[in-house]
Length: 215
Figure (cartoon, rainbow, N blue to C red):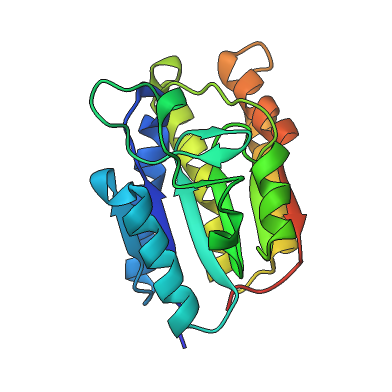
């Protein structure tokens, strides 16, 4: 029985353009392979919608569930869509240290700055199954990369959620992610900006929690 992945992409800044592309590629992969993803984009990433969707999946499907988030993060939160005229430091996040139980029974894969450093551990304490994310900021602008570099990071960002859909465990998926970056590093000039970004991603992106199959 196929399960329902949730793909979230606020996509409201220059820094999240590659994330937006990755979310679209991943959503298409799921559709092409028999899954029925819930794709939350733009205003649908406000907290009430986000919370309702996660609760509905928790109620109706056997755990663990899968949340894939591409967007801005802080050490204590994942941020949703940005209201006009507001900077993300003033946002009401979709999930934060104050409401980590919304992630109970979820495998959380978050391409988001800093969120593993506090929120990830808080989520695990409150029942999240596994949490993948960045320990530190990730400054990645599409304008800093050529077409090959954008394709490389799209591949990296989708490696783990695709591996989970191919019945790899969370730890196996993380190992594939690390191997993918290592392979790309071997093909990338060590003096290039892309090499530094790849190396930084490999160093800062980590996994905590249980080693489980998604489905």
